[in-house]
Amino acid sequence: MDVLDLSRWQFGITTVYHFLFVPLTIGLSVLVAGFQTAWHRTGDAAYLRMTKFWGRLFLINFAMGVVTGIVQEFQFGMNWSAYSRFVGDVFGAPLAMEGLMAFFLESTFLGLWIFGWDKLPKRVHLATIWLAAIGTNISAYFILAANSWMQHPVGYRLNPATGRAELTDIWAVLTNVTTLATFPHVIFGAFVTAGAFVIGVSAWQLARRREVDLFRASARAALVVTLAASAGVMLSGHWQAQIMTRQQPMKMAAAEALWEDEASAGFSIFAVGDVENGRNHINVQIPYGLSLLSTNTLDGRVEGINDIQARYEKTYGPGDYRPVVGLAYWSFRLMIGFGALAGLLALAGLWFTRRRRLPGTPWFYRIGVLGIGLPFLANTLGWIFTEMGRQPWTVFGVMRTAAAVSPGSDVGEVATTLIGFTLVYAVLAVIEVRLLLKFIRKGPEPEDAVHRDEPALPALSY
Image (cartoon, rainbow, N blue to C red; front, side):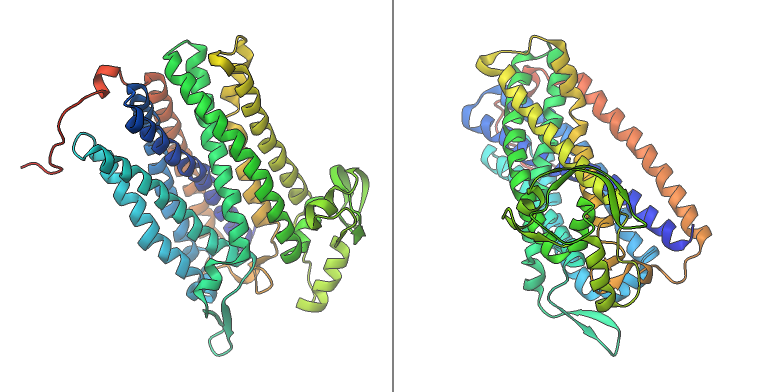
């Protein structure tokens, strides 16, 4: 491997690892805030115990996400300095806004929430977790705005004297139509992730008949959230696919292994392709499915890989503008499949827990625990498809990935840091899982340990 390949592997590993924590943090922040709101409105101590139990797991995940996110940002200067120099004026703006505004908001109020129990008035303390949750979602928006600019660059100009992209319209960057489509898709995916996590942990506890009333209530709330969010993922994904078809037709064509322009195109279920000759040997399809997904019409015309390749060669010059078709094709399908299974699990769970029942068969509890992994797989495959499907571009139509790598790096340096980061992340993964399992096994605090009617104390004591 050369420096480019190793740098791509390193960024891919750290990005995928970091994004394991992000959606769970986003979704759990709102669920915990919802549980605390229920306690505030009803005074039921069960909701307080739920808040503290799920809040502890949320904080463990949040801390790990912060650590891995900081490391990820260093790579822009380490492995991708040419990219940083070229787009720093544009790309840095939403990231700076995320750090100075959104992350400051979530970290500050999360700190107040952690240390404000029995010190802040109940309403003020409730407001802190909601503000932290809002900050978490705003943080996601700014980061997605930066990434969306790489998918569909707007609000900039190229300075011929410096050879750099310069920001001309921050509002255009923040209201990029790609961002507006991507944000709800990611947020709904985060709620599916958090919901599946709560369902799985609750199923593990219910299978052992521990705190049945509490975990049944947790599971029911998470089942509703997961099912509703799954519908949101489907609708927002449909919108996103239409935008992708217009902005990055090669990505959509690769996702469907569609080689030639086609009207009334079918959605491929299973294909065996010949990439070298640009055709499929086997292709099982749902008639009209791709045209409906891409254009909202049954007879819509969708561009194929071969035709787009010829057009791009005329526009951008000689080169291979195809992503890894097999990877794009299967990551797209598996993303949809795992996401759909999470929604079906939620639907089945609502049926089995109706009228205050508990599932009578142990297999459902096992599936509930295994279902924790479904949205994580869907999220990971979705980001792999999004980023790999854009290749060979780092900034679509503007900068190729080969031109973005740091010119001063050598194979030994990048290989050493790649191995080092991967090993560190493996250790962090073990720590994360062990901490989560420890507190899951411990369960909620006893009622007499959390239900107190003590007067509010000053936040600082001397």
